[in-house]
Image (cartoon, rainbow, N blue to C red; front, side):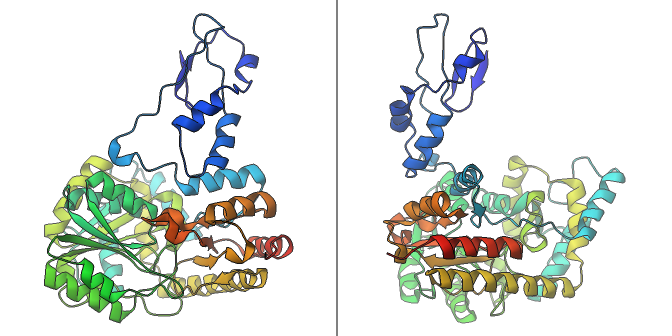
Length: 452
């Protein structure tokens, strides 16, 4: 018996492959009814293209597939928007300025270090919380960047990317019913992992043009019931960097109300217009902060999935407990290579920022000339724009139009809000692509987009 993954049903192999290739049109209403998604037009097309005929012992009898089963805490979450948009990019031959992965490779010296580690036989399970060499390199880099001395053995936990560091932090330190504050728009894994932890989520919206922190709203939101604030700076998707003044306000509220901070700093080396500040470095904050980071964004090696969490021992314990039962350990040879990467001279980071500044300029100027309202981006490799000059009803409709009619992929930002209406006018582009790709995408938009 084989399993049809597309609609979770079974078929027997004695019937012809030709029959199985024919779309079963009668399944379309069922799929639309039982596989709801806010991207209905896109996903309905994808579903019908993957329909298969299903048979029991009698060829004339069809068995309807069973509804997908998922835990209630994850019912609201669909296939990630990044997967959906990347699939559409391939289907329509569009230039992908949506998902944040570079289309160029990481530095040779880091890849060579990985190859050498493999050849040296460093291929078995690593120590659960990281190989000593990488833990030490993370601690040394953090001291250089923040001025803080941390114990690599007791305060650094290596994870499978920053996404796992986020999950281990939420699952290890948040109890069901704990209140956690998010700044919307936010990276989509935040809400999902908090839901898995059973947290009560409270949103504070950062609004264009500058996405500044609404200080009075935050003060009203924080209380003795607040367990943690999840902070991302530089901020995905907006490119905002929290200022020292904003961070001081957050720190003051956390100290006053005994609140933790979970700080996602994966874009710390992509700070273009102001200094990146780790909130853990502010007075009184290290003892209540988990700082999360990764190798992938800075070294263009997103597929390696090497991340880490830095926290005082009393918080590290919970993170490691969760990490032990999520992935236990992370790729051994890649950890050794990552240690080599983190010891690179500062000249690497300076060149990285120069390269990305040039890419950013190409994209931002092109988007403005194409007719978008472009909002400031001080960090990350993302830019958020207002798409409404082109007359589409919302961000999802615009992104579908952009892919099918223009041949460029962007990400609709409504998926990054607790209330999707707040993001319906905005879409996100990335500039972590080579300059020729960026110019080609810009040219398509200038030629094919028209204001309405």
